[in-house]
Structure formats: C-alpha cells, structure tokens
Image (cartoon, rainbow, N blue to C red; front, top):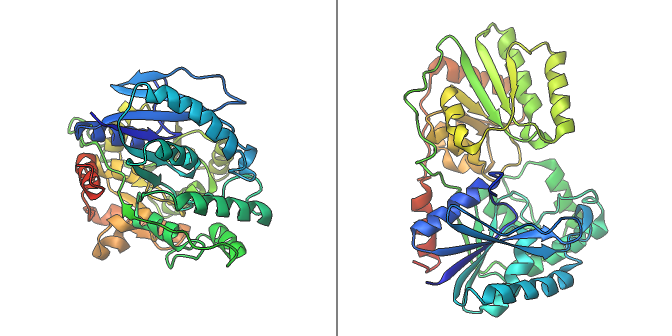
Length: 407
C-alpha cells in the first residue's frame, strides 16, 4: 500500500488531545484506504527527544529541527534543518518505500516537505494553510521590523512556489494566500494590513501551481445532538471556546453580555472555556470583576475532547467574535451538536453562511452594541441556523483526494 505522509506541528499525543482537526483528517484518510504516517518536528536545542508513538492506529514519528527564537529571520536555519531531516528520512525510507503524497501543515513544515519531495519526485507535495496569515508575517516579537519582514516574506514565497498543491481551509484563507502581498478586498484587520503595506512592491506575488479549498470537516460520530441533555428553559446559556488573545475579542463578548444584563436579561449566562495564555486569562477575569458580572459569567477549564459535545449540547448559542479567523472548528462543532453560532463577517466562517442568513448570524464590525443586538434577536426569535456546505469530514476528504487524483 502506498503511504500518505503528513508533516505537522499539531497532533494529539497519548496524554494531550491537541490538533484534533488534523487527527480527524488523518482518520478520514485512513477510511479512504490510505496508509497514513504522521511526522512531528521538535526543537533539537530546547526539547528532550520525544518518544515516537502510536495513537488509534496512527504511527507518529518525531524529527529534530533548529527553530529561530521568536521567528527572527525565520528560515535562516533551513540548511541545518535539511541536514537533520536527511538523516531522519533514511530511517523512514527503510520502512516506507512508496510515498504517494507529502502533506505539510503550515509554512513551518514547508522545508521538510520540499526535501521529502526530492526523495520521492513522483509524490504529490501539498501544503495546507489554516490561518489568514499563511506567510506568518505577524508572528514573533520583531514582526514589525522591515529587515525581518522582508526576509520572512521572501523565504515563504520561494518555498510556496515549490509545492504542487496548496490547500486552504476557507475561501478567505485562499484569498490572503493568493493576493499576497496585496490586500484582499475582504481584509479589515489593521495589524495585518499595516504589515502588507510595509512590504509594498518589495516582494513579488507567489507562484501558486494549484490552489483548492478544503473546509475543516466534522466527525459526526463525535459531534452530534444528544437528546438526553435537557436545556434549562429558565436560563439562556451562551458559550465561547478560545485562547485569551486579542483577536478572539473576549472583552467584546463580555461587554455585550453586560449590555444585555442592563437591558433586563437577567437569565443570561456566559461560559468562557480556556485558560491560556495565563496572563491574559487573569486580565479577563479581572475585567469581569470590574463590571460586577460574576453572577452572569463563569470560567471553565478546557474540556477533554470527548466531553466537548456535551458542552455544546448544553448551550443555547455559541459566540466567538474573532476578527482574524481562517475557519474555527468550534463553530462547526457547535453547529453539528445542534447549537447555532455567531461569528464575524468576512472571516472564514462567513463562507459557510447562506447570503440571505448572514445578517442573522454574523456581526459586521467589532462593536459590543451590535453583538448584543444580534444575540438579543436570536434569543427573541429563536432562529434556526443553516449552513451552505457539506461539513462531513468523510465526504470532504474523499472529494479532496479525487481533486488531486489520489482516489
């Protein structure tokens, strides 16, 4: 059987279920008859050598890399990484001689995919983009420094031109991939726009051989309505899952909750799930205390993946007002469980909402009053949500394999 190689920094371990969207992709590939092997990089200087492992019938191998601190001149150590990776490939070659696809997740794994392609020139090389910043120009402490910005952009463009297929998780991600260094007509995030303006015409547009959109899919055996979970009709429960970083806009959601409470909706309850990064998490808790909203807002630790479906089923509404989001799996997980969601226009999730329903489920700007009004309208009218694409992971991966002639 031919082997389908996935190279990714995100994947579950026996102790931590992190990177579940890639795990679901791998399981769907296996169900399509693919022999999938997962390769994960680790920092050769900082990390102890992690043990290889197998999880749910998926073999996972680790290989060493040298990573630049805080993405300074990211790519400067590629020549060392190639040498380290060549040694590792010899180990893989002894076990897997017939590779049909080399699938890299994010720019950070591009170097290894390019090197692997040299060993297997007939294999399809694929790079998948999850973020609205596929060139990672926002990453790192020195992202605003022109010398660093130019270097990273040039390296990324050169690497991207060597892949056979680019996969984006939404149309919005594909827009930012293909218009770079130009600005997509739907891009509104000033931090990203300012960096693109700094680049100006100093870098060329990328050469993208083939670009396709493959939405993050849902495994409906894990995320589905649970009839046994009965909602408390005396409480309107809103949930949010996400790291406490500025682009997720937790403060906006808290302010919207405060507006609704002030309007007399004393039955509203907001559950915020997560605790990272710790400093920002503490700031958000203090923000809630300042507004005396402890009665209406609770903080919950991250759930085990097997418990997430129960959480979504307990909600009346899921809200994540993220303003720079490729395509959050949490929206689709909530929808699969029968709980509608609210997001932001011109983000990845916008692609999945029918045109006639966008005003019901998406806010047009980062404004607490608008978000509060949106939630109120959903509470009062009890809208039923629909999306415009098939999000079954099995159907998505089968169609994807057909599109790249691997099925």
